[in-house]
Length: 499
Length: 88
Image (cartoon, rainbow over all chains, first blue to last red; front, side, top):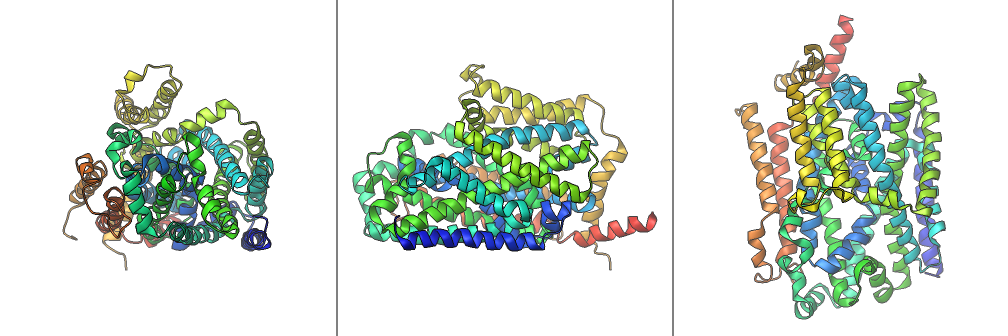
């Protein structure tokens, strides 16, 4: 990567981010709603890019390609198959009703929406604690993964410490002044950039390997097991079924995703995002699947975690050095677009749902607090990413599952008027405790019936919500009217438009 | 479709979601992974299946949007907010 053109590409990428982020900062007003939610004015392209770019992490290009290297073409359906449909469906199922309540009552985060529906500070506090508990380790792991990839693909020129500093530092340069607008506008740029470069990359690698058909024919000849899902032990049907409960349904629960839905200008924007999403997910994961499987014959012999380096290895062995710079830009764009949204959502949650709730602060002061918290959390995340404590990494291993088991509570609260604060608190705490007992091997493995722990924990969340809500007093009529009466009124008006 | 009750629409959506889940967990089709020809020379069945699944998902989501996602309610919200303002 020691060539002028490569360095020029990197410099142009960083300069573009700073210019776009700077402009975002220029038009952002110093109000809570404008800084954290871009004034609830995001159009279709902005919401789509914001959600998609946040959803795609280093795992897509690094981890997933490594998995496809080992498991074959079946990795595509295993990792992203169910997400292709259910992730955008949850944008309707949860996002639409939550967005309506946000427009009506000014809610912006999950603690506000679900604490507001149930008139419960306990529910709001539980949501806040659980979301931070799962998001922070996930954020640190994103930084670790991105920094390792950055350092590897630079051929060691950039050390891990410097890579982490660059990732966080550049993100802060446009996130702190620009808030949501800064991250969303850069996400539009970064999402477009990584999609286009990834598309060019698959054609360049395919061409270097003799063409799409030639490399596929070689796979059929040399390693036909890669075509068969039944031949891959990782894709055993019980794992395949269980995995559907992990990454796909967790997405709408991520605070950075939920908050961005709340920032949509209209429900038409959300509808469009829902319709664009399946093909976008299939596209980007399709590319990383092909790169991984092709790599298994082009660069054979990688074992375990070594396989995660397959994309950098394909680029370094088969393409010119300029592609290393372009590959690095793809990795940076993917990683940074996730990190900045996670950092902003954490700052938003702590400012709005902790400081604003317990200390009366003005809208302008909330923005100041948000910026300070953003910097403090970034510094803490950087430090943790350097020391990589085992406890944090072990929580991150089941953070996705932790998010997933909060979904029944979110759906139940938005659709079932009988759901009450007791049922919701129990359904948030009990399955989370069980999930920890399973993942930390306190409970024997047979208690999950061979499934991944997330499946029984998800079932427990559903049962607990229903049973505890039915055994305890129903929510007062006035409380139900506030949410469900509002839904009825809106939906009736939609069916019979008022002239 | 306009004649369908909201209950029927909700049931239809549940059936569509269940159908998509079954199509994702279509283990009975796995035996075709190495028997069917490779599409366009580079897409084996296990890969092409999910390319087609993505197209189907888009169509099913479009149907769900038409069935249960009412058209822009923001106007209704503005009206409700305005009416409440008048009452106060």
